[in-house]
Length: 443
Image (cartoon, rainbow, N blue to C red; front, side, top):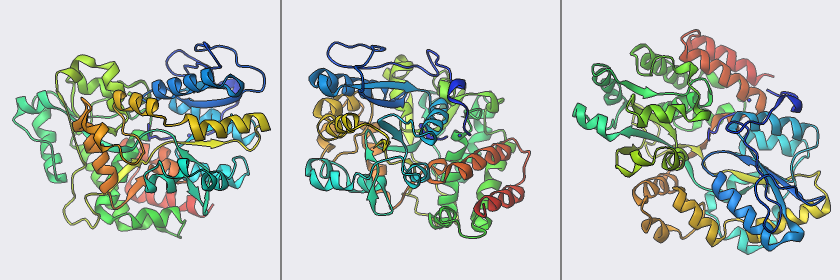
């Protein structure tokens, strides 16, 4: 998910055009180099995402390149969907950047299967400073078939239920703790002319957050594990049908803002509906807290933003402490990098990534680092309530499910996004969805 995060078919590289907001690119390349500066020949390159973590990454790479001009790194940033298209195309052609951003999971595995990223297992084993800095569960998230191919590079990213406290107070309502309470709130807010939920349906990946949580609450994590394992007929589990049915029940009740299929999460339009009071709630990644701090400072300073966990579902077998989202994002090193680029990348991963200055920037921006021993620093933050919620969700979860469009391989993930979009639009039944997705297992 966006941030989650989420996620899509190849286009030619020439078809991916840069824009100031969607494909905003900037580079860092040595002492005093600013965004867009030309990098020295054969410098290591890095592709990252615009949005929540751009400030942290840009500052981190700028500090590294200034201190190590002989190992400078040029970084370019791309919007979520544009990045996913561009990186798949580049990696498929053996032309990926030296340091590649990913969510791990099935997409990263497709790169390892193609021999396009380096095995970092020996690097991690030989550098305890790298191995020991991470929360163990996050370190293992970059492991595929027993080998490390990705190192976590930023913050914990569970999916959070946000709400507008001012709207709730006027309605005399409390945030939902059960699905039945959530459904009851739909009528409450509709009666006031306010959309119960904002949703960036045009971006498609935000739809995933609903089925991910519902399936886990109803059937537990084992259901999706069977899907990832490509067990024949895995999508036919009754919990899948029930999760889809509840989504369409929410659509039928008018739970989502009118025209949600034309609202883009990648431009933060779903967030704007929440902080302008047009929608009461939003299910989104923890990363939007960071963009809200910069995009809606008055709203944030007023204390109107509320946040909580996803509701329980009566009769479900999933642990209510389970979370979905992204344990982190990861840096992988391209197998096609030159020796000079490779050494620069590894040196940065060892000594330039997640430095104390990086951690200060991340916490100040509203993120929770994927590091051990940060509790005291979180408690000292002005954002401690949110940061402690996120840290508690991630560290207490019996299961932290990676976003489905990253956990699955690219082809199945694309089919999932397309078919789930049809579920939300009510142009496909749960039974049709299940049948169509079962076909992707056999291919």
